[in-house]
Image (cartoon, rainbow, N blue to C red; front, top):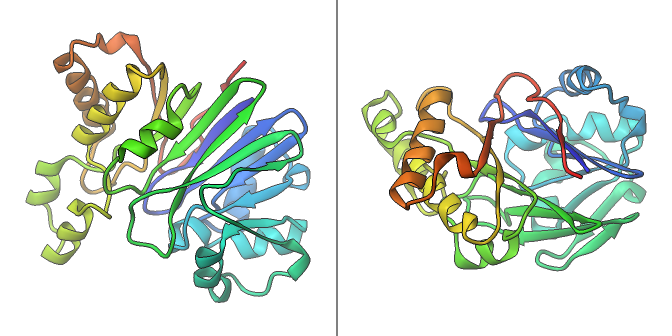
Length: 262
């Protein structure tokens, strides 16, 4: 399997996943041409994609979905409540390209097993994904206010995890955001802080996770070195060497390379 976070942040989210004969986008929250240019940087032609899978209907996850689906005849996968919330935002999609699934029930795209699982965020029916192929598993878990035990159960033993580390709490509280936005971000259906990302990672380490990409970092309320160091500090506090987990970063404005899972 191959995985590349193309963009990750409130300005737009899009990731690429490949498994044998399957090539997917997870979300497409930027202009279609921006996504295709990013794909070109990792050597992927948009004509070779098989589908776009949606986590939730916020604009930073869907703004390019309509144009990409129409131009390249790509099926769009979403649960029913998300589809109903996004359909008018993305423009007309031919019915034959709409794939509505049920959250928490797995399905296949060719040989790739896909498990969409429920996540806590302030959207219609937000989800994360586990993608499994030949005993390897890539999981995506961003835009989450907190991490539940059930989420931990689902993504344990992932070969690679894209995990939200959205903000440093002190930076957020001291920053210029209005009170209502700070309250939303800090809520149980908001976004995961660096510290809470570290706590989740410590639990997942005990469940077999060894490779993580920190994503959805806030431009205003976080710094890449700070996110990394905070997560590592939490691991050390839990008596886990910070070198025990391979840790990468998903950038807001450019592809973050290709991760090979074999």
